[in-house]
Length: 409
Image 1 (cartoon, rainbow, N blue to C red):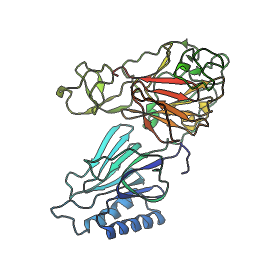
Image 2: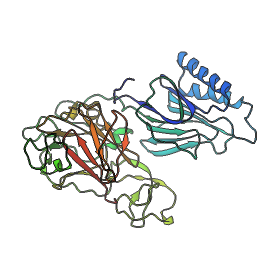
Image 3: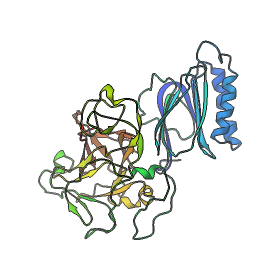
Image 4: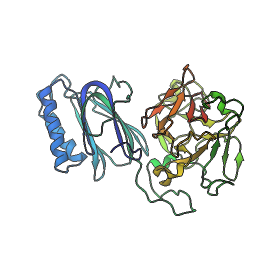
């Protein structure tokens, strides 16, 4: 596990239950019955020690839940969530008032028992990118914090957030650039849009390049950390030169997610109040969520108008091609340079998770800062902790700065 961003990560959400992990097996339990909780923790340890997978754990936990004294009564049974990989996908067990929200390569999905005294066991065959679970479906809990990462053992928790590692793939042959695997579904489907294959003059690899202003350039101070560092930067895609990137509808390779249509016909986030494309307020005519191709969720822009469509993941840094997700084709490189050398080789990641855009510091030496539009001060990101970014937020990777904007913002 460790802090390698290419590996999966599990984060606890504060609450009154217990979150435990043994290897690839995860268990979230309410603790109204302390003896029952201890027995499930022991069961998790035994299944892991014996080499059992997620399906074995779900079946074993289910048998324990069905034997609990509250099972079948008028009150809710024990609230439990278990999951882990199995031969045919990711296996889940959900009981009581617990719920699980999944982001998969084919869209978003919720797993919950239809009644609090029911037990759900399910195997999801499509690749799972992220999992969010809570012991109470009506109380999703707070977000994770800097102390909440769990690699093994047990902690107090009321929910969890799990981010799957990118699938291991062979690096593309030199000069060919990242190529999609025919027929593959998974996080790689997120990285859509044109991929340049020829390096620009003076550059050594593919991907757009962001040049920050040097010392003494207008709009910078001694540290280079100022909103005005945006002025004078140039963002180029090799072979195209600087210029704005249009944000239109999704292309044929856009990932399929659950969404609704606004009154203007744009496919958009069913949980938002306004359309991500045109900003129109969603009405009852939007109807129930249905699968559809996700449009770009905004732009990474500079004050001079240069921009990149946020329709997939980007890795930002001096040499982002060294990141394994770029080599695997699940993210695109965004090269950033500045005269102060404040940018790490692999600095930060823009991660598109369902309908949400997240920023992740990848352990950069000088850190990654985000300045929300409604905040007075920039915030320093905790390494490897995903943080949602909203319209108008400025992102500082060392001294250079980008701004995230949504068409509907």
